[in-house]
Length: 94
Image (cartoon, rainbow, N blue to C red):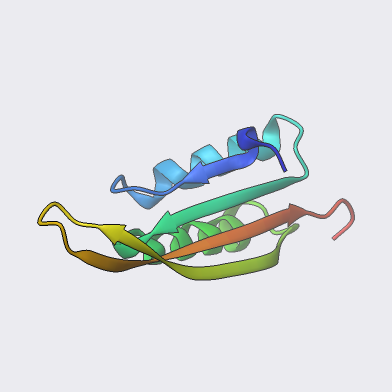
């Protein structure tokens, strides 16, 4: 997995990330990773589902990793932020 195959999810509309992920596959890669933190997690899940159901039905979810990181806030306190990584793989004959 290279950094070129990673799509970071932020505050843009879901379709922006769908197109970015499809571009990863169209450039010849057989896999892609969708990464998000905090409130963007639901957008990451939506992105993966739109890709699988509407655009690339031969793409499957290979793995999903979740976790929590401790972050230092501006006020000096520590807070936890959740993250998700969705690993997609493109099957050739599916």
